[in-house]
Length: 192
Image (cartoon, rainbow, N blue to C red; front, side):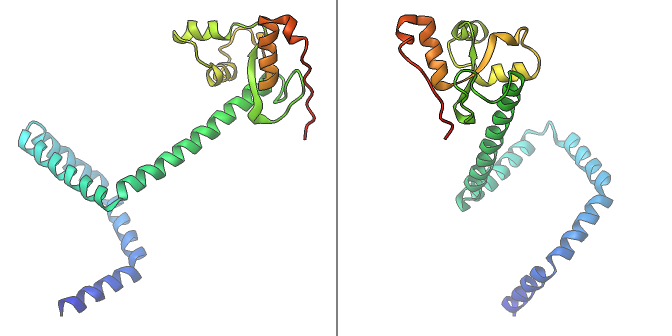
């Protein structure tokens, strides 16, 4: 009899799930402040009770372990991590594009390359490593930080920067270090 009753309740719940959730939501909204006040009073009463804290921690750990065993925690973490990665990638692209537009457009100033993935910001007179050393205490690419500063107007003189593709940026570096060797190269962008 109990098994049949359980099956009936499960079936009824599935059929009426939306109605139940609406009722719960309405009840939550109607008693929101009252429940918050109860929670505050309960917290105030027990906040210095170490055994209460231990019980809460044990309960939380048990729930976490149960979810972890079920695989839900890892699944959720992977899902959230993927979303964060995607969001960060889009954000970086947006900032970079805004900086390129401020500097004259998303196009290489030397060869005309317009493939976004190849474009980067170049220091016209060199000194990118020195600036990185000065700002962060070590040599590393300034990439997104320079773009952010340009977009936010924190750069004093934007004329010292230009948009180049990676190949032209490497050639620019060669011009600064080995001008005789650099003259042997000529870069042309086909645009295919």
